[in-house]
Length: 504
Image 1 (cartoon, one colour):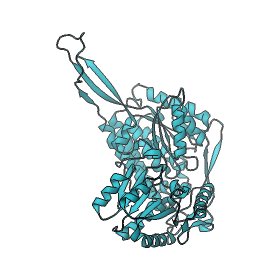
Image 2 (image 1 turned 90 degrees about the vertical axis):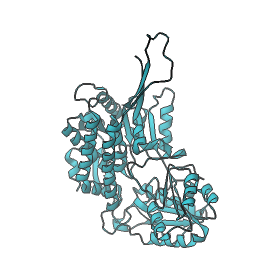
Image 3 (image 1 turned 90 degrees about the horizontal axis):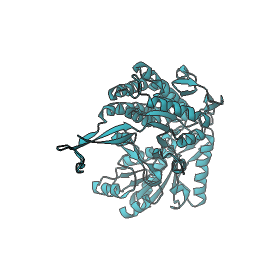
Image 4 (image 1 turned 135 degrees about the vertical axis):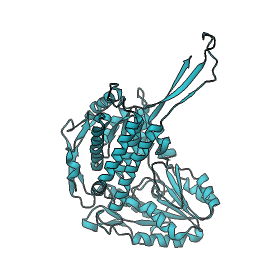
């Protein structure tokens, strides 16, 4: 199952060729469910960034026939559609590779591979829809103009340039597709830097992209790949040859990117940042509990809670609170853990021993501060061979000012609290520094709209949670990010508008 992606050495891909890191370093990847070694890949360092960016810029600025610049929008669209076909053709291989490298269940991985293919299909269609406008401006005709002359203006959409796409470890393939597809549709060139712990599906994606570029007769250098640690991402963000940084990850790293971009003498690249979240789920007493309970559970426990929009704060109208908590704890207790390739597993492991320890410590600190665990939950030492497993955990009675409520846990951990009216729950829902997503569960459309209007979040779901599609714009408020991804609005972030004003 791992052999297919090794068509090329697991090296860096720069200047249209696969090769080693400058230091020759390699990085080992492991299956988080077992700790077994999967593979080793090239371990890039900051010294690899400069040459990669310079080669990418050379491809961007090449104006010769057959260059990336010369590729028509329809040619770029056909390229992206072909990549989608290749992702579909290799879907099972990619899904199993994602399970082994990241730990999620096979069902979840299959859904994300399909989602990645849909990203490429959506932006394949969008490539030919990038049109400007022509109009007559309101400005008076200059006095030096010849009699009868007039002003005509137009806007032209151009690619922003070299894009550094820096992706997280929780959904590696899907997050890469969400950045690479719109960037290529816009005519940009991309330097992809996947998370150091989960690079394998990104390696495979680039292999398939290169195949599609070769088939289309387009330059391979439209995409580059740097596998390595955080120092590589930092060097990309600081490099003056990078025109845009598209980053998904922690708020702390997002702040560092902003500081780098805004430092004295910095080159001020365009930024799209999807950062942390602490998303609330609001459950009214009139909600259809038969769907609300499993829907909320899926919204927080999917991918073992390692999802930026996980609904890890649940507020339930007081008269329904106790029954809801009992039902949610029952779902948690009945969720089987195991290796993601095991047919019966509904939750896989956490990503690493270090991350599992952080999640366990956050829960322990919350309990020490007064929160109570309902039923079972917490670390599981012996599931499916001794990986980094953590059972779904439901807590009540947490201090609303505690880190358990205020900060991202990124594990299968949910805090439930009661409320009495909509104003109270909106105040609680908005009482964090984040604003990524939220959901409301109710049969009353008027109540749903009050919550939608009042919650400060980039996405609000009604009677569902964690629903994604390429045309659904996603972005964060406050410390959850800058800019948006998906949809034509997300594509606009990879474009610059140039105004042309002519006296004719």
